[in-house]
Image (cartoon, rainbow, N blue to C red):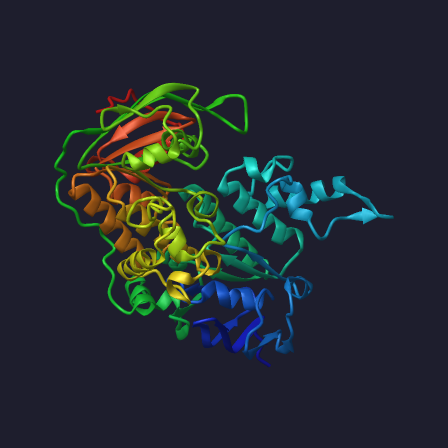
Length: 513
């Protein structure tokens, strides 16, 4: 007799105001299988997984586990059925420790007293077994996004879940962490756990998944065995056209110096040492300079110091010939600095504002959008937002009046990029701009960055994606433990060489141009 599927989702339909997120989708997960779910931003992948995890109730369709129909009214029901989920936007309590987040809701106790030592022992054993190094006593608000990701995975493993849902698990990880996670997923599947893996990254799907289900605009396109398909075929299924994986650009035409940073030092919030130590660099109009490095080596603090989110311990920042070291965030913005932030929820959007209000966050005070009496010109804001939504293909159920929180992560990212690029900045600071985006959107964003450079603007790219680091910039600076340890021409270096500098195995005296 044939073994029943671990999970079957049959004819699932889920609607929201103005949009059918899942339109009659079926998905079957075999036991011990890694099954990828692929689709564009806003295709309905996270919605489908949220239905399986009990966060949403479908209007139509049924779910079966091990061949028997089940009702999943909420995440507790899902957990009781052995279904765990690592969400794209982490569900962590920022002021709690790593350990407290992992055991939250299933705290071991005796006679009402918390037995944390047992929990700590189990968490540390899991952490060691699966190569997920964490500090159980660190506060979530103080650790990197990569560490938060590990916390989410351990939360799932701690509950002994057998169906594991990974929603964009590699979006925030470094290349080294990604290869480690791929191995962890293979080990889990070998132990008999069944994995649903949402990803935009075709290379990862080809490496780790047994089968892949593709959905487009909320509809089922097909399920294929990855061993019998190619990245080109998958991308065409996903976006409905062929995608160019190579970034095309002309030689750079350098102009005047736009940004000069001299001996910048920024304090760390986590430890007593400074996170950024004595960094100097210059960027000219018409070039893209990329800061590469393993996550947690001072890139975040460097960007916060540059954009005004954190004060400097020492150093000087000059933009377009003006000293902006002590300038406010708005002053920097008005002078021509745009910032696509690393954390789109914390620093990129006001999640409970509408999409149109988010799109004018940096400009609402301008005469085009505010009258002399101080009233917002709603008609102008709506027209401007509609233009950007169409131009950047930001998909949202109710257009300009969609609440930002209800949009998919990729479309939230597109909205931020639309707002920051459309301001026509002198300096565009882009931190992981393609994080969580599908191949079609990545292709478009790379073209936008190249267009800014070709228009004579300066672009500072901070990226953890080695393909992006090699393809997009004109110069690469590697940051390790808060210092610039190497400068490279992407045409004359390799990923392997960059990896040695990123890990601290090599360094050179950087001649900053």
